Image (cartoon, rainbow, N blue to C red; front, top):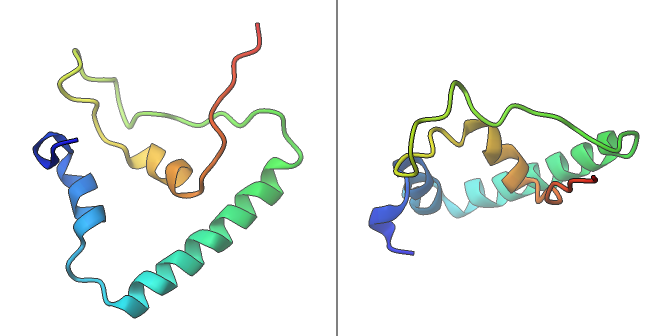
Length: 85
């Protein structure tokens, strides 16, 4: 995907020119700890419901709104949702 089509907050996360190697390693370690914590908490549940948007979703497909609530689940490599009918 073309960088111009990415949200500014996503570009900042990917490019983050202010991070040193030590900071990136520390962040990776923290995400590993977070994944283990989420996995442990999820063992007791078949479903975890979380908000997906800060407010009402914007109209149309040009703006998906803030990814604030989704970033944690993406970073934790949470399994995708499943619908059982």
